[in-house]
Amino acid sequence: MASGGNAIRGTRVGAGPMGEQDHGFHAERIAISYWDALGNETVRHFAAGIPEEEIPETIDSPHSGLPAGRDKENPPALAKSEPYKTHLAYVKERRTEEEAETLLDDALKQLRDRRGQE
Image (cartoon, rainbow, N blue to C red):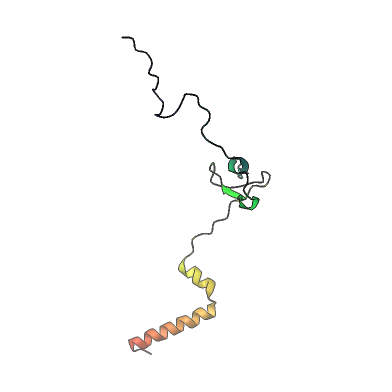
C-alpha cells in the first residue's frame, strides 16, 4: 500500500478550508509610534475612535525599559530615582534641630522618672 499524504495533518479540527482568509471582523485602528532615548521605536495600536486624551503620552519601552514618548526629537528622560531613606532621614525632614532637642529632653526626663533618677 502506497502511503499518500494525510489531508488533515497539521490542521485543527473545524479549521475550515485551507487558505481561508476570513477570520472575523477587524476593527479599524490607528498606530501610534513611541521613541525612547536610545532611538528605539515602539508601535502601539489603538481603536480608531478612541479620544486623543485616552492615548498615553508615554509608555515603558519593551526594548530598553526606558520611558518612551510620542515626540521622536524629544524622547522623555529617565526619571531620577531617589536613594533609599532611613527612618532618621524622614524624621529630620519633619523636625527642626530645636524640636529634636526638646523631644529628646522630654524622653530622657520620662525615662529617668521611671527609673527613679533625677
